[in-house]
Amino acid sequence: MRKVIVTGGAGFIGSHLVDRLLENGDRVICIDNFDPYYNRSIKENNINSHRMNNKYRLVEEDIRNLDTFRDKITEDIDVIVHLAAKAGVRPSVKDPVGFQEVNVMGTQNILEFAKERDVKQFIFASSSSVYGTNENVPWSEDDHVLKPISPYASTKVNGELMGHVYSELYDMQFLALRFFTVYGPRQRPDLAIHKFLRLMSNGEQITLYGDGSSRRDYTYIDDIIDGVMAAIDYTDSMYEIINLGNNRTVQLLELVEAIEEASGIEADNKTHAPEVPGDVEQTWADVSKARELLGYNPNYNLYKGLKKFVQWYQNTSIN
Ligand code: NAD
Image 1 (cartoon, protein in one colour):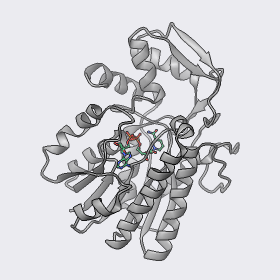
Image 2 (cartoon, rainbow, N blue to C red):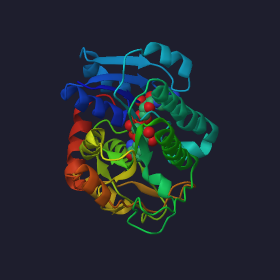
Image 3 (cartoon, rainbow, N blue to C red):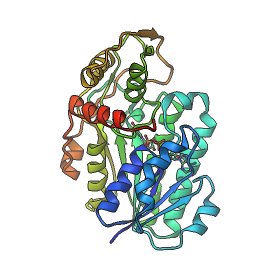
């Protein structure tokens, strides 16, 4: 039985990962500070079932405070999956220092903890945003031209680089997984699909930034969790960067139509606003490396994933 730390385990992706690890019989320690970026009740709801499992422990701590969380975790740890972060491009433009403190210093703290405890495997949630304005699509990990254009993206580049240092110096396997816009049940309420569905359901106006031609590679949560679980089992090399996307890029206007179709609700009230600084024009993952190393094979096309998301949204009272 593995002992796994999941930082950010009360959040969207983290709570799904904890579900899967517990199902698998692993022991999980979740470190999360319930960052107030969105409502605590949503995160409490995410971890309700975890709290009832005796293989689960919650350490409510801030990753900026190495001295306090180190004292609360004394057991041997096999794997750390580091997902805790301030997330989002737009808020990072407003608060670059806060993003640096959590995503860079916080990540350094978790790496230090891993070094001190001789943890052999570290998995880091990186992001498609690191590719920035690189026009060479679909984006491949072999393309070393990273052109981040937001403070958030630069913190993720930083995490990948710090991981390389620790992996070289301390015999620690480090895998950076570059997630491409993840969606599904429990999705962060600030992200487009969740926000649009909420506004459309309430008959409110949705705002499309730019002319609607921007593109994103949307990845369903179960596919992402399959990729993370396969990464935990991966042992063939000490340092890898791997894209986890869907390998299909979707225009913003096409996304709205797909949400209309999946929900049966028309987006009658749309407005356009100027593009937001920091947002990239398109994201598009080449997932051939994930297929080769992890056996990754995304199962959800956008319509199938949106149907599941809408179903969840309509059955949950906490959004
Ligand atoms: P989320 O906000 O739902 O989860 C992040 C969790 O980290 C939250 O529960 C939050 O309380 C916790 N956290 C934040 N600051 C912390 C701190 N100082 N100490 C301890 N815990 C802290 O976000 P998510 O969408 O689940 O994202 C998870 C990870 O995946 C993040 O690293 C994010 O950057 C990365 N990522 C997400 C996406 C996406 O589309 N959702 C895409 C690319 C990368």
